[in-house]
Image (cartoon, rainbow, N blue to C red; front, side, top):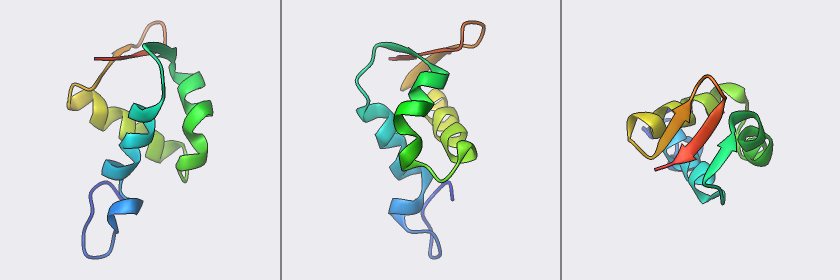
Length: 73
């Protein structure tokens, strides 16, 4: 689910689905609005959260948890 393997294709992995978030045009957006804009690309909220977590760890996005905002780095 998170990374491609013999049983999980690249297109079904979170690594691939992170691109949908990065392709969105925003400088700063609420997490809820970002999910609404990209939810059709994910099987569920859990995949979206995995993608957000991975992007944060990689330093591609920054989050303001108190305000619920996501910002591209």
